[in-house]
Image (cartoon, rainbow, N blue to C red; front, side, top):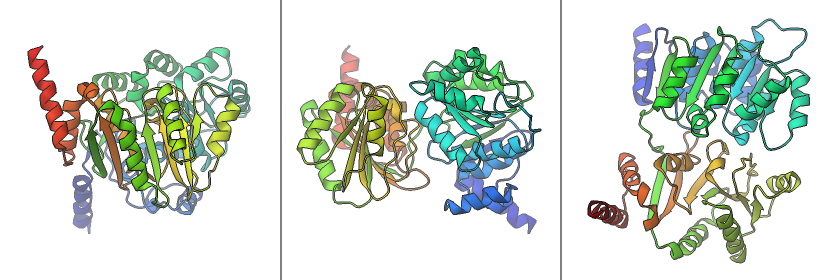
Length: 436
């Protein structure tokens, strides 16, 4: 029996491409009943129709529940939010409860407003005293909620530091720290704020770091903040596309992009319960694209940084009979609720990409090709989440030369068809580089 269990574990690690390193590396959990979570949490998991732990949850839960620091490298859509949230709740419940609460026991740092909101929303399903802190709006209301007392706080670094300086809260009680999307927080320039925040937390805390990539900057942060961590990696450490995504790339002239987009939307418009995410590069492109799609008969709504909070809320809650088209513009991030049963389309910029956690997005369209391969991976990673399948469709022009070589490599590594015109463009670009 022991041999069979060990064999099952080895096969699980191999099949799921899981790497586990550390002085204390507990075996993975395959069923919710093995977690040791309180019955109330297990019951809520079942009611939410979670059948079994995801790969990252299977290995993260036993590590976190034993009190170890942990570094977890996994793609988005892997179920990582619950991977750190539920152990955090158990950790908090095991701490002595103070009479007056001036700060959280569990602190989760994340890069964008939308991700902070999603984390807090997820945590609220399992615990009541949860709050969030993010910039852009609602400062006074956020401060009031925190002052009333919270056990779990999800926060963007900038707003949290603002609250700490203003005396809205302190971190004396914090013993469980999570850095979610650490690579993205560093990309966005939050390292000084993160270091200042962490310096205010007691050194005997438990720290968990989650990141989609493992560059030098993230490794340095982990070395400075974590103590004897367990290292968990799912998949290759090399940035790669989700193998469940069918990647389609078409090389076009700039003036052909709108025609190709409309052809694609026309092909998918008859599908039931599909959700499509379209990426554009600039506000004016999205405004123009919204008008174009409306003229072609697709109801469209626009959401961007120039709108008031009331207008944003209206757009986010709107339902258009058979097809809903939301347009997210600018550098603000939003939680967008794609209504069940609607065939919905969202047009967004890259800022909305990383934290967007919407189930069942079937198509991702790169109307404007991303500037680098990292953004490409993160964009298309909005589909095929939670072990489902999806399709990405990228419109590539000659002006997208900086990404072509790496795009071809990503397609080949994922065993996708590389179109001949993309290979021709790669050869053309290589030839021009040699001439220069």
